[in-house]
Image (cartoon, rainbow, N blue to C red):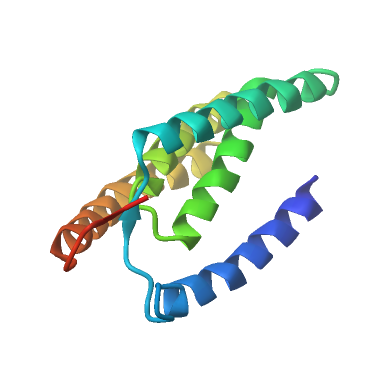
Length: 144
């Protein structure tokens, strides 16, 4: 599973680079956009469905928190896709994912890793604020 995730992250990094540099309507730099509540509802439903499916599979292993582990993995895949497409709300998804990750690493007594995710939470607030200001300053804020 981890090798498949590594491949996904490498592929999405290349995809994201192309999107950010020439993914706009006329091959220009991609602007920040937002998703509609309907789209979020669909995506969150899919995250929930896949979390349950993978959680049930992980429950048959020695995973301590099979459903939380599944949720953070599935949601991180979605959030990474959102980053690659400059979707503003990716920061909200990352906040939820990383907050749960702090708990998971603390529960496993991986305190340094947990502290790293606390740092990520600080960076999330900084990133969200910057993207939000950039989105508000665009000629016509884009919603999808």
